[in-house]
Length: 354
Ligand SMILES: Cc1cc2nc3c(=O)[nH]c(=O)nc-3n(C[C@H](O)[C@H](O)[C@H](O)COP(=O)(O)OP(=O)(O)OC[C@H]3O[C@@H](n4cnc5c(N)ncnc54)[C@H](O)[C@@H]3O)c2cc1C
Picture (tube, rainbow, N blue to C red):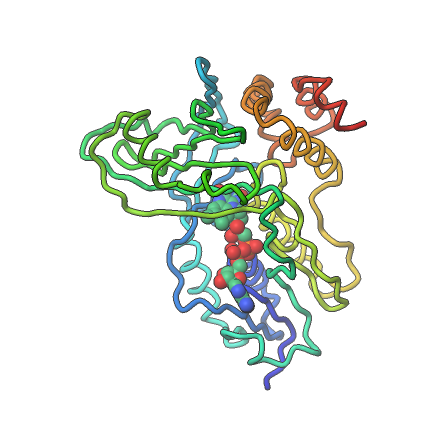
């Protein structure tokens, strides 16, 4: 079996982002890389969105960018501007083809369907798979979306809706998320923050149809794309191995209070690439500890007080836009952290800290 200097297990968002970063920084001229990916074909399967708080390699894969958004609770809407950090949506289909087209030019990079096809023992491994069992009783951000097309101009594509809590919460945390890509085309998602044991929260299709037809009042539409997923809001634990670094969701790149992962993956890929020559001895890249601490408290509050969460999210957005965006994107300074914390209901949070 062939040996490789590096092996990436999982050619998804993290695996391909890392391979692209290594390749475009000329780190694979004299080194070989195997990417293990079982999928038969790459096509659009996800829509990755985030506030652009750092530069990334995929501007040409951005489907749409917004400078304004809203958040709603029943009877109240907050409009927020984000001119300095636009909210971007990446089309995963464009992302995959851009990366695959770049990687296939280098003969040192090879794709395999199964790890058994390569010799692993002398390689350095970047692993995006988790050893964890699928723990349904833990907290997940689970969601499903329809990308719809209408025959009339029904959307305002200058502004997206981050969270609409004006919907049935079922003793949980529930909101709709609407990304209008044009005046006739939008991705509408139903999102829950809960465990995965309650099947009644997972009749996504009915929730979406009801929201589109009775809340947005859109009766005539065509569904062009559907997306369903679940992001663990807990860190997946992998066995630590000397010659292995975990990447992506399995590498702890998800911000637990929000589910945002894409930009953390990009930062991790840059960090690995910069230090690749001596990666074994470099400090592990992690999301800053303060966010882990704060998110941990936030999620404890969320689990115990789901009925308060729409108000809590809404109040968080009463801070200045840059403060809240920096905080949610792990870029906040001490004063911004304090500003966010001061918006939280004190006693509810103190109880969880104690
Ligand atoms: C539907 C969806 C939407 C999301 N939207 C956002 C968003 O808007 N913003 C954001 O920041 N984050 C988002 N996330 C979270 C996160 O960015 C994505 O989950 C991202 O794809 C994580 O990258 P990853 O490489 O860890 O996992 P993946 O992209 O899932 O890659 C894992 C890869 O491993 C492969 N694989 C599976 N089994 C094996 C095996 N046995 N051997 C080798 N390979 C295997 C899979 O085929 C896959 O290609 C979203 C997640 C989902 C599921």
